[in-house]
Length: 219
Image 1: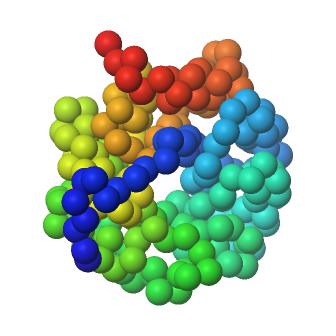
Image 2 (image 1 turned 45 degrees about the vertical axis):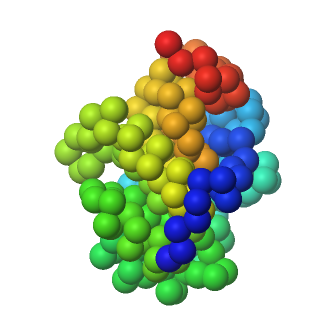
Image 3 (image 1 turned 30 degrees about the vertical axis):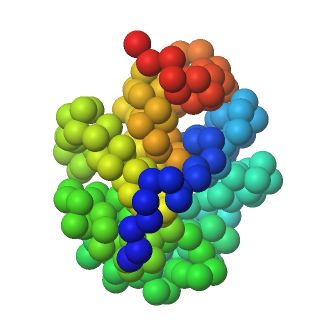
């Protein structure tokens, strides 16, 4: 993959990328999702699904796709690449370079194939070379652990300076949004801080958008 000089890369303003909790019956969550999406500009929603039979999962995705896509946001499925087309999703997010390479050919070019769980720079570059539509840095692994925040910022800065493939940076807290945006992320992924906020998802998304709009205001 070509490595352009920093001056050649012109990035647009970063946008929000919402990550859902594991979703079961979609009715109750649909209203929360609609509220969040109506509060500010959101580029994409990563839908995490509770395990179920394939038909039930497809129906669940279809219900939430209608809510998401009506706002102009893309709906991506966490890992469930095999049902993305039938469920009407816009693509899938795969964790790990091996998982990405196993299915990206079945998604692209019609649908988005993103890749996270990239533990090394080599893995990130391999994902880009294999055609990833974006790479994600900083998301927690299965046991909830993640690199230090300083290491995540460093990885985002390195990527933004060298590569054209978009970078999604995962913010574990609202306070991480501005530093990650200032580091050069194209999208900021945020999950728990949105859905767990006592004020409701709309207020949380509005605050996240405010932080995103002022990435230089880093304490």
